[in-house]
Every structure is written in structure tokens, then in C-alpha cells.
Length: 446
Image (cartoon, rainbow, N blue to C red; front, side, top):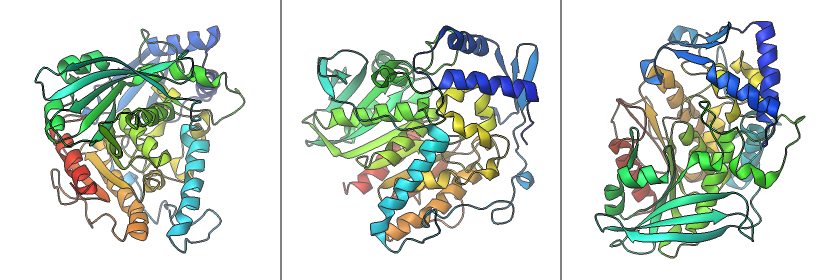
């Protein structure tokens, strides 16, 4: 259940959010709001892995969201809420054949841009890559390169740095996995992990995949504590100040997705890489970004979003586990401001996340889901089932599961649309990488 905010508090916060989320170059007033808000938020208790109620306190006033873990309060599909048919246009026309899918897909993406994530930023005027360094990895099985990518001909302004591993002994050109990391390229290169987000370079290399990663906050910052830069920096310089009257300005998630698309641009310029055989993946918020990148950019061949949480894979109309209302308290910069009108009543949405999943079709999509209630595993599976008819319509094969399988069941790790679930830590584990590469191997006919 979502507990409503006090009217005065909610109005003030919404007005402040408008100021922060709409301008890439924040004013002094906007900056003060962000720093004050971030520094005064407390989260009690624990983490998403605890399946606990989240309580946020701001100064002398309190805002809180009680997260529902009672299945009886989640409602019944077809009784308490409905899901829009991905194979029916908004005007009620049912798709006749596969030739009409691009039009329906465009309609769905327009809806998510306008109502949830904001507009996908434009393709840059150029993608100018330069290799900064090259060396053998410590085990000598791969070549490690550092690339810097600019978006202006004169190589001025913002850039993204990519860490690239190319296997030495795999047939060339080789497929590639693209990924955004949490702790920075140097940390990844030196440790092969960021917190519990394991990046098993040796296994990836031995399977014959190149690997590309960039630090997500270099694309645009993620305002999580006082030490971080102001929101909407980095590549946002390329687009200038946005109109504060608009409610569909891009949030951070779709900007990170834009960065993944630019990584694919770079991959297309590296001779040892077959960029058409690519996989885009990420975990948690970066799983959301990977899903968005694949939904919007049809060059992505395989997408593997991992444990995405709210406004990722799971259905929002169930209002179970993590919710949009919870993300509003500390993560508002991830979205456009239009989405908050659905915060207190997600069932009023004329869409749900199954439609976003469908936008990857007919390309290959593997959902790596989680067992914790915070991530609503039932809602994730229901979204998959609701999106499956699109793959069936376009390829003849949808999700080959009638009931949600137990954790570690690999029976559906098969393209074009797969599903798998596990227990233990939140993040990319060795199991997730195994399933990712098994699925991609099958998608590429390896």
C-alpha cells in the first residue's frame, strides 16, 4: 500500500522536482535543492534484499512509502486491473501481420518517452573514437584497450571512456557484450568486479566474446550522495538547456541507454568485433538502461536485463514490492516529470512494462529475475507472459513456460524469449553470466 504524502509536502516536492529534472545545467537554486535533499534522506531499514518496508525521512517532516508484500492486496489481473494488448493499436485495430509491428512498436515507444523515461536524446553529429592505450591482460588471453569517444568532429566537449577486452585466441571477428559499470573502468580492470557485480573476464574471453564497459556516471551523474556532481551533466552538454515547461525531458535512465547505443557505435568501428552479434546487459538500474537501449535501438541483437526492479520488468499495476512512489523519494532524476501523476494510482496507467519488453521483439530477450519480494518475481513473470504473444506473432515461438519455474531452472534459457530466476545476492553473479552467454550462443547459432 502506498501511503499518501501530506498535501503541502507533496506539492513542494513536485515543484522542486520540476526544477531539478528539467535542466541539464542546474541553477544555484536547483543545486541547493538536490544537495539538501540528498543529505537529509535516511533509509530505514536495510536494503532491497531485506524485503523490508522502506522509510524515508526528510528534515523535520517525514515522507514514507509502505511497500505491499501481501499478494491479496496486489489485485487480480482481469478483475482489478487489465493489461493493454501489445498487438492492438491504441485506436483498437489489431495487427494483421508482422509488417504492422514497426508501427505499433513506434506507438509504444512514443508512449514510454512521453509518460515515463523522457525523450531518447538525438544521435550525435559524429562518433569520434580514439584508442588511448593497448596492452595484454595479466593472463595474456585478451588484449585490453582503452578508447575515448567524443561526439563532435573537433573532439571537444563531453566524452565517454570505454574499457574493451578482445580475446586473442577466439575466431575473429567475435561477438561482443556491452555493459555499464558502477565503480569505474579502473576498478573493473584491476579487480574484475564492482561490489558484488562480478565481471568474469576470463570466462567471457574463453567463451570467445569481446567485452566493453563504461562507467555509467560519466555519461550523466546519478545523484546518490552529497559527494556526487549535480544531476544531468556529462553528455547533456550536447543538447543544451531544455525547456522547463516540458514534462518529457529525458531522465537519467534513458540517457544511460543513449550511452550504450554510443558504445555500439564504437564496437562497429573495431575490426576484431562483429558488432551485429552483440549482447547488451546490466543489473538493477543499469538493467533498466540495457532494456531501454535494446527497446529503442534495433541494432542490439540480444538483451539481458538483470534484476531491474520497479519500472523495469515487473508489472507496476500490481503495486507490489518496489514501486514508482518509492523511487520518487530519492530517484526522481531517473524519469521524466510526467510519470509522477501515476504515483498514487499505478492502475490508472494506460500501459505497463510488458509493452516495453515487447519492443525488443523479434530480437532475443532473456529476463534474469530475482526471488526477493522487493523485485516482485510474480510481477516479472506476468509481464513476460503478457509480452510473449509478440514473439509468438513475429517468430512463431514465445516464452515456453506456463507456470513460473523455480530458481535455477534453465529450461527457458533459449531464444528468442527466455526467462530464468535465482536466489542469493542482488547483482550480476557467475550464474547470470553463464546464462547470458548460453542464451547468446544459441541466439547466434554458435
